[in-house]
Amino acid sequence: MDEIATILHVDMDAFYASVAEKDDPSLRGKAVVVGAGARGVVLSANYEARKFGIRAAMPVGRAQRMAPHAIFVAPNHHRYSEVSRGVMEIFESYTPLVEPISLDEAFLDVTGSRKLMGDGPEIGRRIRADVYAQAGITCSVGIATTKFIAKLASQACKPNGMLEVDPAKVLDFLHPLPVSAVWGVGPKTNEELLRLGLRTVGDIANTPRQTLVRALGEANGVHLYELAWGRDYRPVTPDEPDKSISAAETFARDLEDQEEILRELLRLTEKASARLRARQMSAQTISIKVRFADFKTISRSKTVSLPIDGMQECYDLAKKLYIALKLDRARIRLIGIALENLVDSDGAPVQLELGERESGWREATRAMDQAKARFGDASVRPARLFERSSEESER
Image (cartoon, rainbow, N blue to C red; front, top):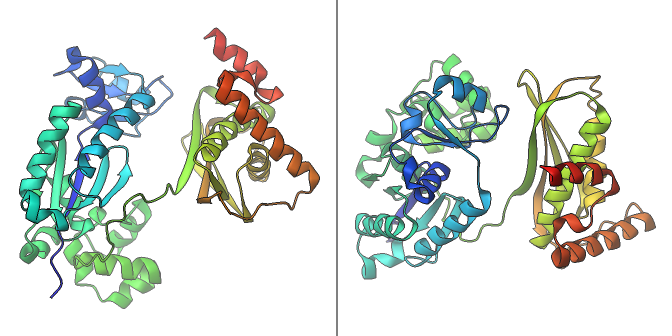
């Protein structure tokens, strides 16, 4: 008989805000929000700030109105990555089967660690103690036999808690939860499920599979039905490659001029493609995101036959996607680019469809990367970005 798995989902509590409090102890006990500029968005809010209704992805201006006394701090992504690396090293000291989901959460398969380190709750307690002692922040741990239930358990015991779901009581834990708790249920799917009169996970489980398939499509219908019965067969996969590399900018003022917007898109493409090449990866899909002044957001994407990694290659596609939107003086609040469907560059076939000009761009890009590595990011940039670079230097 197969051994019953022990899966942990470890999730830092209000990670960005917790790091800010660790670095500045005077913030502890106060409402802390991570997010810069009234036109930006909230990246994290500690639990004191959440009492006032502040949540991640909320406009900073709205959060300021909800809690004028809150302390708003600018994000420090370098610091978050540094703390995250330390946390992941703690996880890897317990098991090699660690699957990071983001900077602040990961799945751990500790099935093979139980003989040496104790059962799931014992390992969970030790991990929580290590994270607090070494990183100075708290985390919540969910323990179950599957990834899906472990993640739900960690959410249920936040903040700074631990919850193990007994394999014999999975459905007792799962079925009373709202349908929005199931992976894959976004706003649109949630609305469709409510239209069908399905409000809890138990309602989904007790709906015929074919009814769900007719309403939601084959993939979504089967996916939700299986999860509603607690069936999740995905293993913990260590070192899963990044699915995308993205960069976005919320403007200090709404932009209308197409040339100005395209210049910002070029700057973001330069940033994202440099990260792509630094990881020795190439992308097969280029996506753009555009958010208007009224917060309506649209996205478009293009998949190419062979992977690309050059700044100009990526920008040419992103530019075509933007121009195809035919926006006439629309007021743009945010623009972003995502490089997706990533593959290792080593040994990948090279996109040569654009001819010799493309080869020249590839060589120029490599030269730019080498110059930046030696002299810094501002040492060489596309000519169209010199004006922006000067403004950044003055700031």
